[in-house]
Length: 134
Image (cartoon, rainbow, N blue to C red; front, side, top):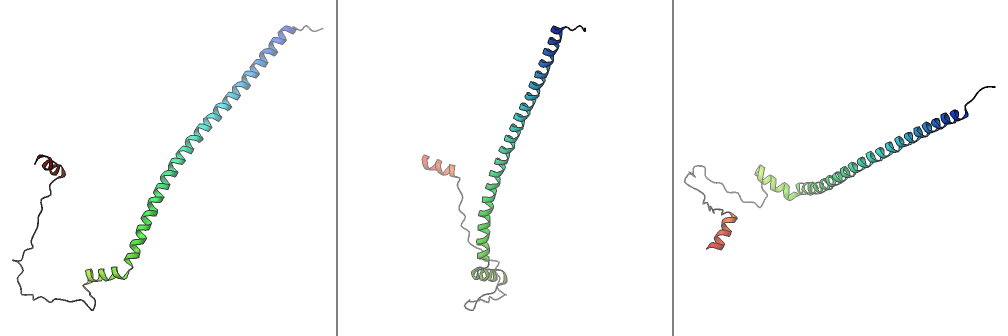
């Protein structure tokens, strides 16, 4: 007959169960911690994406407004009024109803000076000062 110490075997089995349970609890804690860390990272990524989306929407609305302005400018630039204005301005061409003056070339225009109406621009703070002190 073999000698066996039942109490000692129960202690070893109890310790093994405790180690197994501790390992499972540790493993579960690691899984829970990694899940929470992953959720935190996804939340941060989502917030960054929302901020970028708002920024892109604002930029898109600005570009749409700018596009409308450019379309109006293109429409005006292709109109006959604009074309006539630019031909007069750059090429010196006119229409049939225009009057042209031919000035003699031998006139000396050095003594002709334009009149200047220079108005001194007074800063606003001095305007207020003069208003209340005079």
